[in-house]
Length: 206
Length: 206
DNA sequence: AAAAACATTCCAACCGGTCGGTATTTTATT
DNA sequence: AATAAAATACCGACCGGTTGGAATGTTTTT
Image (cartoon, rainbow over all chains, first blue to last red; front, side, top):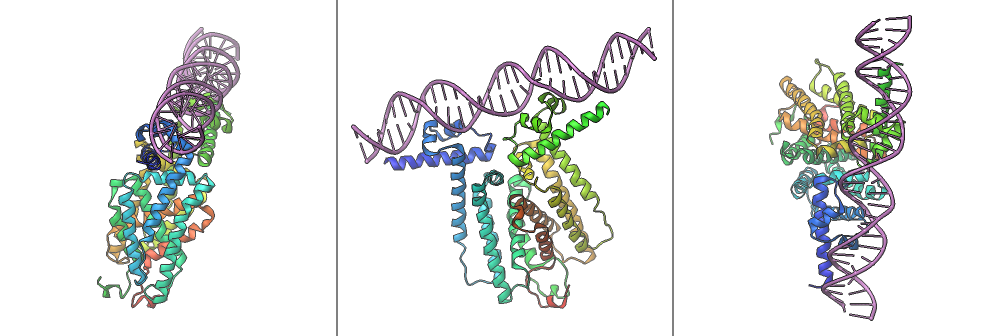
């Protein structure tokens, strides 16, 4: 194994160990020594790869953002109606719920630091903005193509993102409290078809 | 001033100082000494009123929950249709946004600790459950009275709570990013009336 | 040999919490 | 009413333990 490879392995081990520790105990409660122990490397190796504990945290955030980008990139479906696209986006949430299983508390760590660190804030808000923009586009197209009723795409997008974020947060707090994937599906369904009884609502039996 | 009164003043000063410090710097980063300094009292006074830093945190949580209860209590409107009741609940969010102005990061602290402390978890989840139950009841009644289409009240309630939670979180991260109160209103509107274009949707011009 | 990767050791700073002591108010007793 | 006794509120120096990170040494790669 070359030194570069070895170095990368050590680095990933540190990142993985930190992810686990931060998720389980939080950022402050986790010591550098503990991360090193869990990763099976020394403190020297730690500070060889990361300038500080905070730097490791940022690296972890970057890693998450990259993964998010990867997921969002696999969501290219130009020839679909807006409702279909929106339904498809719900499936993306499933990815979040599954991949981040047990590590969802890490989101809270990110968000918490974001409230205090300008740099982390920018990075953390980026996906929010991206998804908001993506949804706005879908909704706008849906209105144009007539599959959605006229409305403010901006507000709709914000509502959808909020619901998703709220579910992620609650699933982080209470993973066993409910089937969040199903709730997401149902929630989107409601957003699409509405709750209020209309005169013609019963004509459509989906 | 009696000694009791003085005591209560000191206690509130400590609570207020802690609220500010925790909101601005987070739980761990805030030292007991700092809280005392900001409150203008000594460390001895602190530990006279609170058994530990954690206990002060819990007291802060209780204070918030009481305020929430107070707001929810002012929401008794038995003779209203379900849609009206749901719309009214949105107004409650406005209270949260306003009262917690600048202190919303505190929510993140609560939620973060909740993921690790059983007691705090119970207390934090309680309002979620209560609002979920409240909403479930409203929706169920709405279906019974025919103002809402048949659906799973449980899922609807979860969707609404999730949207609210997501908005609170986002407003904590980005208070100036949007008019969250308006977004909440719009989101609820969408949940009620749906996004998908229906044949008879244009007959109702609300 | 030079440099990069990793290990070991150590420490100054800090933090939550304790404790002995003081000041003030309330209660009990005469 | 006067006084003693008890309780309450508060103070701030101090302690044991922990931590992030620097300093320095050792091994491995180039």
